[in-house]
Length: 505
Image (cartoon, rainbow, N blue to C red):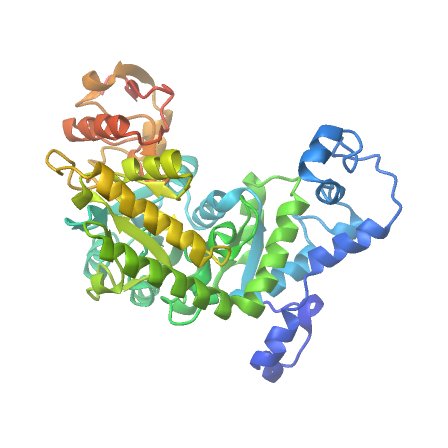
């Protein structure tokens, strides 16, 4: 499939397309934004949805969100194109995004990166197909396997014992899995991980392609790789077939907005059909325009934006490591394999030597210091730093961490050593989820097969997934995480005192 650089976006000769100046001149356009601006000048009488009628029908909502916002919360119409079948401004926006990311095609996703992850899996996997992937994937990946009935071939990641975190995929283990499962249709990698760990993406992609397998990358936390300098390789440059790029995380767009990127060997028309199976037919123009505007911003200013972010994080990392006991880790972890590279924009901090679980530090920062970080787990916290941050805010975080150490430090005796527990897969996620089930108290569920998800969110990596054996170690971990204050989600029982298990297992 040839690379799709749209006429509507920027019609240039092949030689001109390769010119950086010409490429950037195309990126000054924002066709969805421009269409909405033109729409606002029209005197259309709205006898369509949404029912608030440009905010006039819901005064309280308009006062809260603002008239400018409600004015462009509109339905698909001729002037504004249609997300399910784009032919004008959305089509042009997709072509500009594809150009900016170096993809053959890009799709606007307004059901979150979850829908992008699910679309790329559903595009290549059907019931009974095998897919090779690490077990420490986001829930959305396993959700897709529940939907399509594909069979996961899990590669259990190595653990960094000091940090208690799962690492990337080792090339040798991917090769071993491929050789053992030559009928697999795809390989999936999450790159980077929540903590900033990167796998050898290019080599894994080449290996997958050499065995006629698709390469899928959950790149939810790596949007900035496409626009910054001296950052780990991005999925499209590595030659991957699909990438889910979560623009609302490091890209600056509104929450729930994302891109699905496709490589040259992908049938984009089929992918569109798959997306339309699950994505809303009423795409939000607030989300669409935020993607359009943010893409333009990153394409034009991304190098400087992420240079500034890198400097902020490096300063914070240095100062936090000077406090003592905390460990803000970075490229020194690189081993050329399971940690092939590291995302230096991630401010990941290990808290175990302070004697506090990451979730405890997370709670103290929020409750005592009015600082909301991204997440805390058993042994680490992640402070998400972006262009919207300042040295003043960084200093406030550093000061709070220093005071927490001084006031709350204790012995780490009795703390769990690591976050990830290798699961025992008994049956497929689809079989586990849809089988007849029964509810048991946590302690009584040991030895049974789980029929639902259990996870701490964020980061949303399942501790248990449907079809996996429930062990004593897992139950102890769940109880420990609950006691430490982790936000547990997934089971029908909102209190996580009971689990659904397969009946008669």
